[in-house]
Image (cartoon, rainbow, N blue to C red; front, side):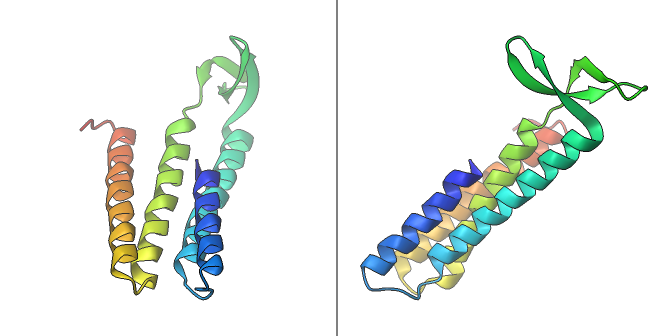
Length: 136
């Protein structure tokens, strides 16, 4: 998901360049916001995999599982990495919306950035609450 956000930022910048608006910051901001989410996602994923678990085949797909007390893979104890990844991707989208809102002088772009930031921010809050066990 975060890679898609980065591509969205790149395409925004490409459209602006084609329109002769080379120095607008929102496309760069979207790429940086989403790029930060991609980097955090990769860093967290590799550290979780290396510190807490291993990749194993289960039911025809690869899953990451925790280790037992002896340091061996425990296929009955899967790691819940996906919710954290979604949270990071949505955080990247909220950052991209914030960068559009802050960096743009155009009222419609500011409105779009504010809407993106608000919707993604709500989903970030929802995911954070879900991680601690609170459902909205």
